[in-house]
Image (tube, rainbow, N blue to C red):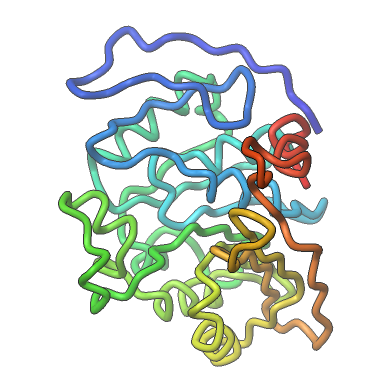
Length: 258
């Protein structure tokens, strides 16, 4: 599904904010603050990897940040999308980005801890949850960022992966999907955590910066109460050896899907 988008420019941007084109999505805008963090390729690849079944009535995006994933998914579905963000300033920017793209009737932001979503949503009520979670455990001090915003986005400060999976499992209906991106070096613990909460990996794709490089991220679709049966999609290579994006990445930007 492709929806024609019209955008309006916000009357004011707050100090330090910029209005950018949303990576890979023509006609869409997003408000960002470079001193916080910028929308990364991770979000674009996750949105493209996410399959939205027809049976889905509502989508939830954990740790939505500036709401890039809800904005991207809005190009492929008219179903309601909920973004969850714990940081007030970031949640405010997400809401204003949604307004800029005239999507306030479809996308809403819940400003709260992911672990507290039972206060807002009923258990066993969601068919699809997406997440671009913090990649690093808090003990990975070498990778800690200087700003609180970046530290929370990249490290398990406010929530651990285990708590995120536990919350997803509680909210998902049977056969509901949890789609997320993570680091390949955490696959053993990822699989164990998913299994502990009755989530089975059904689809996976590894992403390499270049063809001769180690995988730098992995895209995963897990199903609540799913049976064995794993589809491993072809590796996704981001950059050509000679420079520039590969055809696969260019197709994602052009078609908004893999």
